[in-house]
Length: 232
Image (cartoon, rainbow, N blue to C red):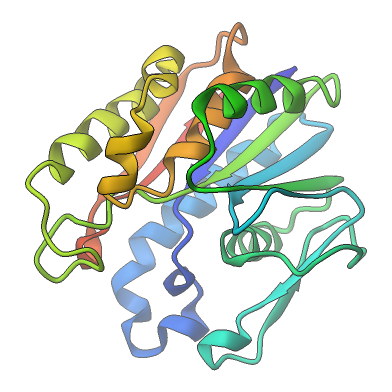
């Protein structure tokens, strides 16, 4: 059963060594992520499952490792489970492993990568399955809002992006499972909102769990919507 979740964005710039001179700009975001991870780890969960996007569906149950070498930083991380079996973690899960390490996590941890274009019903079903992996399951859900919030955004400005992110933030702030499940995959793809699929895994896992929510961060530095939320 799902007992808690932390929702965080996953830009590599979260890692100060990657952000370099821009690191101070994202310190409020790092602080919000640390608070969400602290609440997740204090929830009494027996198992943490990290969910983020990847180029193909993959599951890590015996640990996993990733690195920030592609960004010119000699930094490697691994999931708390300790092993390195399986393929290298994709970028989103590598950021998740870094967040867990920074929070001092020591719980058994699995990880799951989902394609950004995965069908909502499959994500909802995956979430239900993840919630049944242990009596007390916690999720670390990694994903960004629209990357089209400004003319300097990675996807340039789309006038629909702000409204999309306002609605997404509201669902995360209120633990509105059905609204999260109803996010349109076509619109999400057009707005480069990579968090849609992982958020719908959360929706599937949280159905019937009766969790409340707190939105800890909602902003769009660099023209990308970033949200941090705690569900418990």
